[in-house]
Length: 109
Image (tube, rainbow, N blue to C red; front, side, top):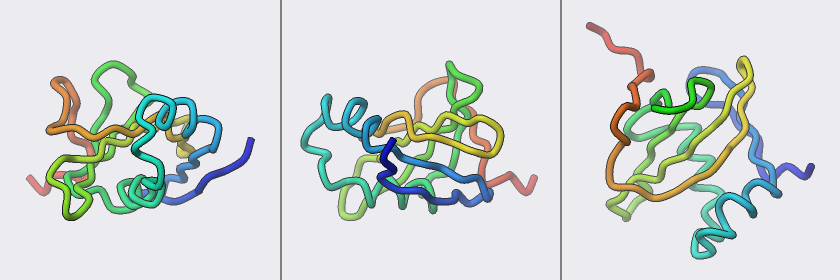
């Protein structure tokens, strides 16, 4: 499979985005997101709101990023096997989903 990009999140985990998955799970449903690949990579490297545990899938983490000048979050879902992750999909959204649990950055309290 061809790699679109490979990066590291703030926790040191490696995340890969494959071209085939990007096409099938992002562009086929939201063709207007063509060219957003660098924003998805930024969301993984430096999530604005943080990283959350997915509400339905325990092996998936959710990264939230606000791409300037947009006002909606870019939500990037990554499925992990150990410390290696693969981008599942990316979508714009207004807020985190009910049931998602904030996991990064860790609370100081």
